[in-house]
Length: 123
Length: 396
Image (cartoon, rainbow over all chains, first blue to last red; front, side, top):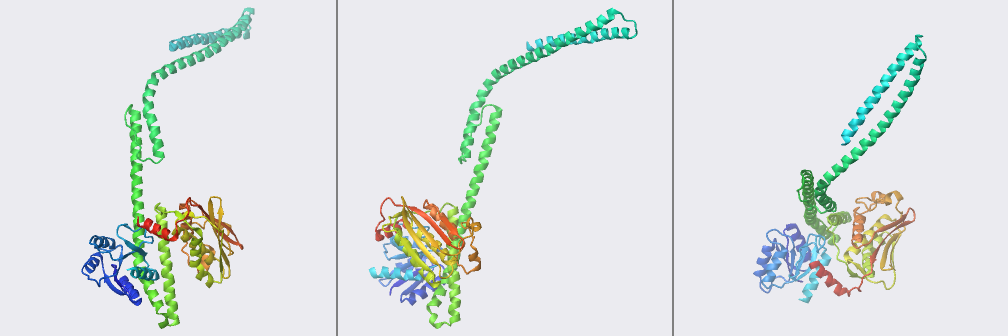
């Protein structure tokens, strides 16, 4: 069981993610864009999210931009990037953000749950 | 000089012709006298003599005609030589601009749309140079417009793919959610959700394939080949297909040469090709058919082949199977889940690896699709290293 912050600009997708992740026993918080992610993570204490699941493309602030700001602020929470593109090689994928992995839409939830387990077991 | 000469000859010829005329008149007068019975021996002599004289004159005229022709020819040659001497200066002043034009045309034809000439020299060559530059300008403009259009098309496909993917993610995700709760659903509801799932997965495949093709058209379908073990690739692909072939009672076997060397390939892309070929073999072959994947060493290459003993492809269809949205008859009559894009994409992917996707098919016997990959210069990294290398490549 892990605390996961999911960011996506689609409410439907947030509902889907929350339902699937909660069904697997995780605790889920949601954000509609990168700005909200920064607010939620920066204001959090030790019970903040253990895994970030960020959509690469969001209005206002993308998942990548939000992650960059968080990393600059010293936040090292493991992050998974969700991209709509088939190949993560297409996504504008920076090397310096310690991205733990990439997922593409439609999301393979079995894979996602395995990745979350792997990330939280190490942590 | 030549003109004067010719003039002299012409006036002499006139004299000869007048002589002939006179000779006729004299002879005619004599003949009239003879006909009237007034003529004597002298008149008969006149007739004979004038006939001879005219013959001589005629000969001289034809000699003169020949001489005149020779003279005219000589004059012309002399004139032309003079003209050539005169123009040789002109020609040499045209030569450099012309050579430059020839050179620039060559570069333009070779794709250098920036090729231009320096406009100058005689007004004719300057006009030619100006026209050439205008043409090159137009070509360059059109090419840049085409590039803009191509970019817009790529952008459109990427955006469309992105926009369609979000709702599809929801459709597929919630259908999966329902399937997780299948115990609470009636049989009919489970079947209904199954149809939704099948179709959303099909749409996702179509989207992925369209995106690949658009990238391929734009020359942006890039691969990152690295030393890759063949056996795990084939085993992965076979494992992915096993459930489907089992459901159709088809046998799916592997026959791999022992100690296959690593090949220079991008694993994900070759797996994609293998799954495409296996999916075709599965979907176009009847229940109970046999499907086999083979890999063997062949010189500096590894040959990989997917065979089936399905219906085979008629010769008239064989030449079209690599075209987009072309599907075999079975694809139209049976419930085949392909997109009609699998083979064109597989062909592009194999070609990006420097190989060629080949097909050998006999109606009633079956089909074999095969391709070759170059053996890697260095052995493949250990799986863990390979994974991190791939992630690094993806991240860069």
